[in-house]
Length: 227
Image 1: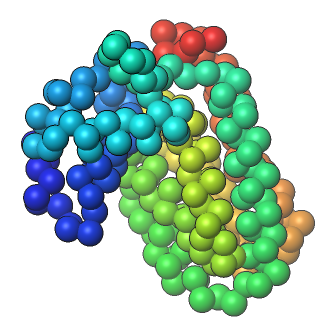
Image 2 (image 1 turned 90 degrees about the horizontal axis):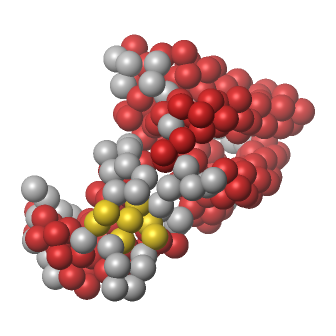
């Protein structure tokens, strides 16, 4: 059990609840359609109901929970239309982020990105998709920082959350992780070479990689979808 007083004091109790539930929803520890109770979650974390209510609201804003007055809060089912909308927004933002990064590349983030790729390699070798997914998240955050566009990662992360659960379903084997790792190495190589054309092609291929798997997941896990 996680208790708030054990967590870094700079984080609020609502932050703790939000981050924990976010991770559980994305990792599919909490499946689409799962019911959640403010009372039970508050008891689990040793907090009052207000931080839980705040965390639920934030998760609802990300499209991960359905909050219904006088009814149980539930983990939102996948929506094909919602996923396509989120992917469109993320692509538009991240393509521009990398264009800016390429124009202003200084190499200041080389070590951090190399370390991140090394961690990705370890996760792949361990066949650990959840850890790989977390490191992938940090990789895209670092790209935003390298472009001087930290603010853009909030938009990317918000829209990434819509498809992250699908990513977990598609990363059940090493092949999926290997493909993403290859994309990441291509993106970094293009940045270092200052090759904007190759960079644009690499990031679009990377972000479009989920397309062939969406329908397959829809067929194999139809109970997780609302449409």
